[in-house]
Image (cartoon, rainbow, N blue to C red):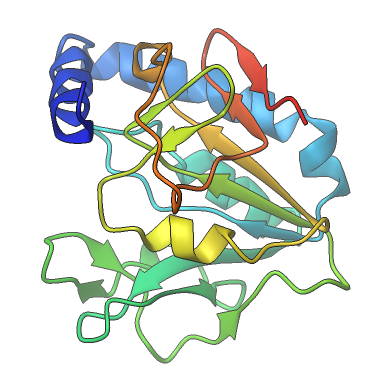
Length: 197
């Protein structure tokens, strides 16, 4: 199956899950992330601002990261260059202050003035990654823009990458190309999956 057809199939599957179930599943996923050793050990949390209809909610994870004092960063895609960077949001009073700029794609994101942050080698980084689909061996199918593939490809051993999704977004196999970057682990409401090295 092509990437385009698989994305369409997964999105149709997501429509069969009620908003209430998505919220319940999101709560389970957040609990698993927040109780993990990966979370406990991390100095910096890189995570995405979720689209509720398509992804597990990350709002409670963001709030917990801010309240626990971890360095917290969310992505911003420059509307002109298309480059994705991460912005630290620890100085904001609440997560509601993050979404100040509407991207041409239609979603809201942090403004350009917030400071950039990168996964430095001197810190223990946890990167929570979105995806349209993941496989049990932790391959990832994104939305097609390549933003996370470019961001993840140069990362070193100081970064743990975890994909989060609903169980219906797990596909037995994914069409993989040479520029596609996998994650180390995947967390759903039902299972953890681990990449075999």
